[in-house]
Amino acid sequence: MEKTAEVVIIGGGVIGVSIAYHLAMKKAGRIVLLEKGQLGEGSTSRCVGGIRTQFSTEINIRFSLESLKRFERFEEEFGVNPEFKRIGYLFLATTESETEVFKENVSLQKKFNIPVELLSPDEIRVRWPYLRMDDIQGGTFCPWDGYAGPSEVLSGFANGARRAGVKIYEGAEVIGISLEKGKVKSVRVGEEVISASTVVNAGGPYAASIAEMVGIKIPVKPLRRQIFVTAPFHLTNQTIPLTIDFYRGWYFRQEVDGLLISGPLDPEPSFNLNIDYEAMADASENATYRVPILEKARIARGWAGLYEISPDCHAILGKIPEVGGFILANGFSGHGFQHSPAVGQVIAELVLDGKANTIDISSLSIERFKKGDLILEPMTAFKE
Image 1 (cartoon, one colour):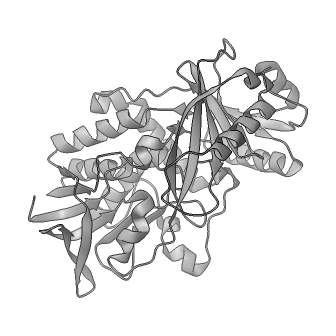
Image 2 (cartoon, rainbow, N blue to C red):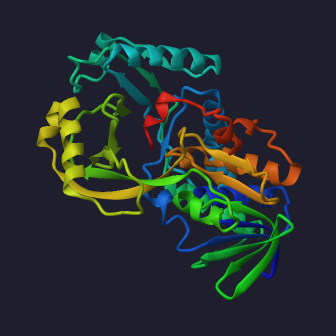
């Protein structure tokens, strides 16, 4: 293992490898990435790969648009097909307050030239006749949205980083971070010590425990979400958008020849990755309510993943005043995969240039929680 490095990245999910790649592209010197298990085995491998522009805060829209450019040319840049499928996202509103939120969102999104549609119940009924409509008051649809393959994107970033000289170590759990005069000095992995002046915390749901190594508390907690996939089931010959029942916090989309349906997000933090009958029943109930014909479908498999949730469901990015050289890339709250290209870019800029230039990330500083400047966004109820 390397004895010295300019930058050590802790965490080998899609955020960590994207940061490593972008640092290498900017000639940041010796870069080491440490992953306690296998690359991507945590939240990245367990996410459903959603990519959308339909957010209701400017900062998330900017991250989406910047990342979308990269997904579109991903194969050209990395030689890996990201399996990006633009099936669109359909949001459904069942209350007047949700409808008002949707109208405000569309107004903001159109300022960024996003081709989002505000739909009436009749328009939704005609286009997607399999939906139960008696309580739907409207919806929004954007054809730019869709999903990509988390493993493909991860391997593209990881292979690109390796080609550029990044040293990636799997099975390398960080057990301590040493400080000297309030600045990062080194990282310990077992008996190995790597001297480094910059450490990036890309630990996903384990971000808080990594921050504790430098005496810092960051408000990130792991919440389990369970996902289920039906046995082969033919719903329609048309493309099925990723459809979100906003009130119920439930979504579904095509998954090969079956359907992927979301289970509940746990209310309490844990590192539990098991699936249970109660969640499967919840997912089935929501599915048959919104798409009645799914009564005939059978759930064939499922899995659980962890989200790294921040208090306002927005990322926590940037430096911290208490410890020099310690950089946060945490709290993505279910949107880390889709924003990973832009996150890698802005963190690399921050490390090398002293500030992010592509997107102003000052509003995502951890300092916002002390100041009470939380970023509120209703659309973050959905963690893809």
